[in-house]
Image (tube, rainbow, N blue to C red; front, side, top):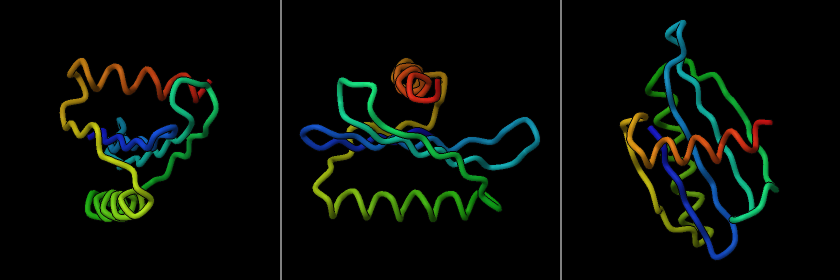
Amino acid sequence: MIIRWESDHDYVLIHVHQDMFGDWIFVRAWGQIGTGYGGVVHSLAEDYARAMAWVEDIDHIQRLRGYQKVLEISDDSAPEARDAMHQLSLLSS
């Protein structure tokens, strides 16, 4: 699952997925739109329910801050998901 929120200048992106060991990974990235400025945090969720609780928390916080949800996709192989993952990889390097 990939979800992205944006304000006029900033974005927050989360990616929830299972790794090859079956663990649930919660990735949160943030930064300024159109720049390389930002950060990434990877967290290990104890289960899928915990990861989804974190998604709900982030969604609530971003909406309170005036961000708009611009992407929500469950299929990581979709073109939009690949684009989002490319942006995430730019922050990881």
